[in-house]
Length: 537
Image (cartoon, rainbow, N blue to C red; front, side):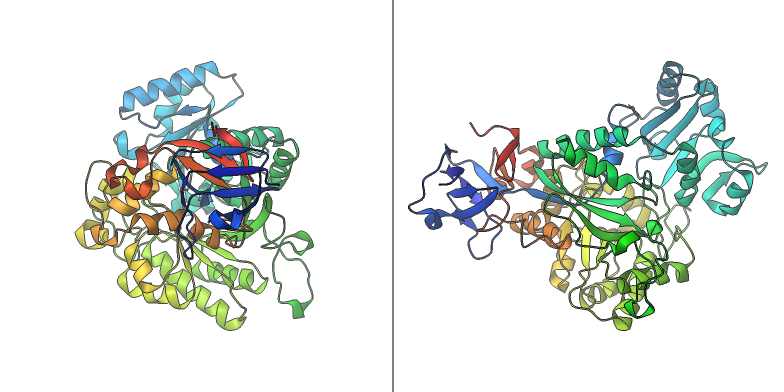
């Protein structure tokens, strides 16, 4: 007997063999079948949806649950466009904090407040508190003098251009890219309970958006890592029932170290006990090895071949190119799936060359390596992405939110290369949609809107020739994203034997105007056949 029978639904299955269905049967957390595959089966519970649309649970192939959850409840400057207003809000938050507290602030964006704030402005309102403004992109922060005083002067000097300095040579408080790690080391450790709560908060938001599986893009170290024992927070969340969604954990490359393995095994660096991609189960597992090659466009640190317009430079790589190349080769040799952060086209060149070297040095079937973001992709790079079997893991919401800014940053010619869609598909490059939450709101239906419409929130066309169909965009956010996470055998479509991760929508995306896709409501989200958000009746 089935646990649940859903009838009279419009099911967009994302299964090419059967794109549409009307009935879904669920037993023991799995899809037993659809339509005629259910003939003769009874159910403990039957729900009729009166034609409502059901799609597979959305898979967010690149997100940051802990960071997103910690951003909930702190001062968030998102939407604050006046410099004085921002400083006043910072002053109120600092005054409310205890003298020795860290005051952490989310949503800081220098573009909307007339340029970066500096330590002197922060000190004037910080009341001596340790004030940290995390840039919305994750690729920079601004800190007060109370924080700078905790950082060893020699370390700041060694960080070079990642530490912004004034005319006297003193740090302004703006720390770029890996310079942020000094602040993280001074701030650590975060209690595991704090992270468990953050993961649960973010997971609940995901469910409200129809997301049932998340790939956490870098734990244990790196730009957005927390304590080295961070995986324990996810295990604790699962054990106490506070893990609302399925989670795949990408391990930051900085967490890998020499294991002393047998030379014949080819494992130069790895995790203790030899853990690698694939360990775990359908609820919590280890995914790709995450490494950062460059920065971000919002912070003007993505490494590009031609300079940004307006004198913002050409961005930067995160380390010496040879060090980054060796990390990619070592990770591949050790059996990891690689998730290589490359936003600018110069960083993508390094990614392509390094992955090609790794594949030649140690061939293996279907390594399924990924390029995270693929933000600026020249026409000549498309064929190489396909030849190397790389998946483009894109964040369409970035251009919905920032399309105007990025278009001005690169000019008309290069704006056509931003976060591509159609060109990837035509070149044979698999596409996975994701959010990079909390850099973007994370709602998959917002991503669908941009992939189909290719217009920023202001209505500006950004790479109009890169538009996808609704079916292609839905595939990127479900089965394409599941494939990027090596989970296509168990999720991403509604078909027999797969997990019963389902979303009920209040409108059919295939029959909704592109500009209204992000207005479709999530009626219910089911994980393993269990309603975890909303209601079926």
